Image (cartoon, rainbow over the protein chains, first blue to last red):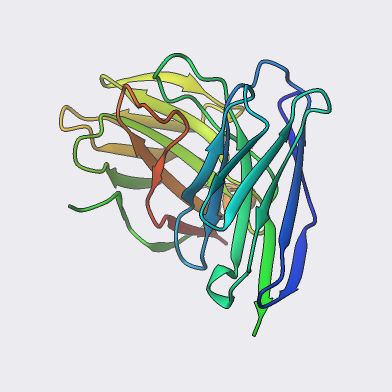
Length: 115
Length: 115
C-alpha cells in the first residue's frame, strides 16, 4: 500500500511535443503529490506538486492532472525541450499540517527530448 | 546561499566495513532526511532527524544509524557493509514547518560502492 507505481520507464519525445508520465497509488491517506526532476550527477529537485482537492495544477509548461477516484496522477510537459531531458520521479506523502514527512517515490521515468 | 552539501562525493568500501556520510542542510532548515537511491530506482526513505532525534524511520535495518548535531548537520552511519548497500545516498533538508510539504531540498549525494 506504500508503493507508487510509475510508467513508462523511459520516454523519447521530439522537441515541441508533449511528454506524459503516469503514476498510480493505493494508499488513500496520501494527500500530497510532488514531482521531482533529477539531472545526471545531481540530487532531485521539486518541479511541481498537487493536493487531491484539485484536479489540475499548471506551472508554466508543466501540468499535473489528478484523478482521485482512480488514484492516479500524471505529469504533462508541453512544448518539450532538450533541456527537459532528465529523470522524473513522482512521489506521495501524508501532509501533517506543515511538517515535512517522508516521501514515497516512484521508480522514475528517463525522458529524452530529441532536437 | 549554500544549498545542501554532502561529503564525501564518492567512496569505495569493502564488505564488512563501516562508513560515515555527512550532510549540512540548507541555511534556515532544521530537518534532515536521508534517502538511498539504487541505480535506476527512486530514492528510498531511510530516516528523518530534527531536534537531534530520529523522528521517522523507513524499512532499513539497524545497521543504518544516524545523528543530528546542534547546528542541524547530520551523519549517516552504515555498519557491516553489504554489496547491496552500494547506492547513491541523498541528504535532504527542509524547514520544520513548511508551507510546501514535500518540498525537500536534496544534496548531490554520496556515491557509495561496496566491493
